[in-house]
Image (tube, rainbow, N blue to C red):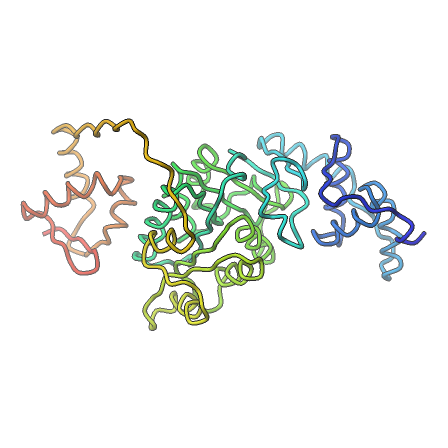
Length: 374
């Protein structure tokens, strides 16, 4: 039976029952069926069941012998893992499916989500950059994430070490989405396990991959297209000339999204990709205001209620903080960002303590944001 004998449905018609959602999952998990093939099969054969029935014949015509569709046991295992992780399945065409992804020709047919799925209906900006980001790069990522969050934007990234992690952490209170290269129940890298827990409580973790899948290098380029696809623009903070961040930027351009980049020193390899993007027409970013102005983002109107000023720390709390700072510092200079990270303290609470210790001659500030003990 030829493909032409089947009527095609509206490709945005979502499954209408749990049985049909099961068949969608089984079709997508079948060998050699990716996002593009899935959409084509559903369009040509009308239903997932028809497509599953036709797959062995299609494979035989392509010279693939003994083709079998994805076994039901595999889907049962995935659904059990999803239930255990409290993950929600979002199908293409459903109300919860993020509208920006409809622009993609290879839009994910299915997405697993953990956390606040309402964030998928809000405007978002992607912040990406180097895993081995510099101290200044991390500071820039945090500042941009805070500014964009304050302007009403959800910050989207990939929870990788370095720039991604800094962006997520700074945007926790305003909304952030972490797109995984593996299953939403597999935290990668392991060092970001605690951050991932916080994202689950305050944000969203998203992936098109099967539950339980450990990410491999080949999974990250498809992941990057989702990061850019969810966003109205991609901001690259630091990136080498050949990096995943540059792949995300190229995806953004192909998808009709804006690309902005933070410039860096020509001798710093971590800035090479950003400088290339700016040379080729990307908007140069110095701060959050540059992004907000370029994209015409308007922050929400301030509340009429005046917030109560924070309660100043007690003498005992201040003394303890001074002691913690001095115990961490030594004669070898330490970056202020690293000190903030080590002490797990907010920069706004640490700054007055550092100024006091400096005035009392107990610490020394050096060039480049470095601190040492006198």
